[in-house]
Amino acid sequence: DWNNVELSLVAGTPVSFVYDLHSPQYTHREDLTPRGRTAAPVPLQESAGVVVNDSPEELVTEEQSREMEYDRSMAPSPAAPPMASRRGAGGPRMASKSVSANAASGEGYDASFNDDQRLEEQGGPQTAVEQMGALFRYDIRDKVTVPDRSSTLVSIVNQRVDAEEVVYFRPDSDTSASGGHPYRAAKLTNNTPFTLEKGPVALYADGTFSGEGFIDRVEPGSTHFVTYAIDNKVALSSDYSTDEESAQLIRIVDGQLVSEFLSIQRTTYQLNNLHSDPVRAYIRTDKRAGWTLKNRPEKTVETTDALLVPVTVPAKGKAALAVEWTSKMVRNVSIDSSDSTTLLKVYLKGGNIPAAAKQAIEQVLALKAQLSEIETEAARLRKQHDALSRDQDRVRANLDTLRKTKGNDALQAELARKLAEQEAQLGKLSGGLVALSEKEAELTSRLKVLISNVSLQ
Image 1: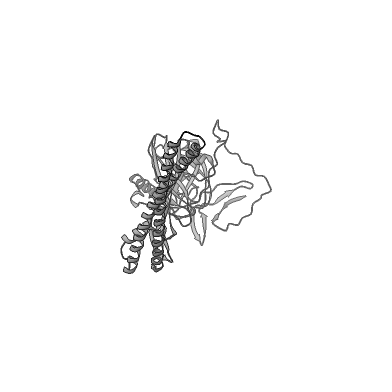
Image 2 (image 1 turned 120 degrees about the horizontal axis):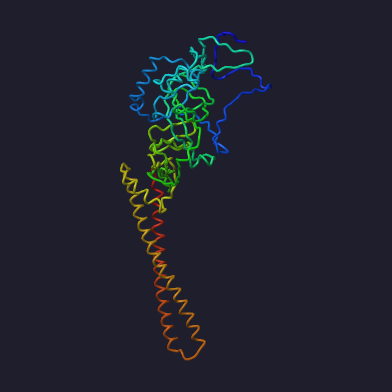
């Protein structure tokens, strides 16, 4: 037996211990399976993150200030891992998980205490904390008694942290249930000087057990989401699109335009809330190498591999959220291609262009304009030529039919005259096309000479 021993606990990495893995261990646990349900969703274990673009004026409300004054006056003793309360959005409503025998049986009950305060008072023995490099040592101030072949729970931390009940979407998850419907979650921020080690967390709301989740290691100042149930009264749908904008010229080398533009991948989320109260939702979007989230909303939580973007959905209402990832891309375009015309015009309007380069680019644009007109006229003549050729084939086929019979001399003569007129028109169209082709070849040659003289770094 351990009788009135002084106990020190060390948390952190590495942790060394000896445990009997061979002998079976038995313990009684309450059956909390929801009735009428064959399977329950498995809570996810998420990485901790930090809130970016935080607004300082929203950190402490008047009610929270009164609660912190109560904390300092009561000087609560340390307790077990924290638990979340539904009351208040974002307020410091975290208290300990442990429940004493007196409280469970109703002895000493004081109606003036709320549930959070009562759980704080059940924190257990006080603890002295000392940091040793990456480790923390907790010296239990009260002596501990543990009989042989038995165990006990010792609370080492009892301090309020900021918490908020939210819904948590993972649209990229392989779990179908969490794609359209979110997890119910407790968003907690570790504003204590202590590191919360990873492990299970029991969640209570208004004095009632709500569920159990898991947390990873939560460093001081970081934010974590403890998921514990699927919320079928909040739904999400999405629409994906891509776009480009803000093209600009970087350089011109060997007849090639090197341009830079902004590529946008946009996902628009539509959220529907069937609850009678507003819902604070967080949508997870995975980070992408070389991409930046455009117009990042305030209160966005950043983890090592994702961003959690917030949006508020009104009671019995809907909300929309556009998540845009942007990345700068480089594209090579030939200066004599049609795609380069717009890019060169934008560059000329920007100003600050060397005089020689400006003159050469203006000549290039003028030649490209003439070539564009030639292409348009050539396309018109080809269309007429093709239509006339098809009509000429029709007239020629009719003449062949009439020659096989007698008594149609007048009609044959009329069709022959029409065929001769069509042949003359086709000759003119062909001549026009040849002239345009020669003009195009001449302008293209001049354009190549100009291009070879244009160089812009």
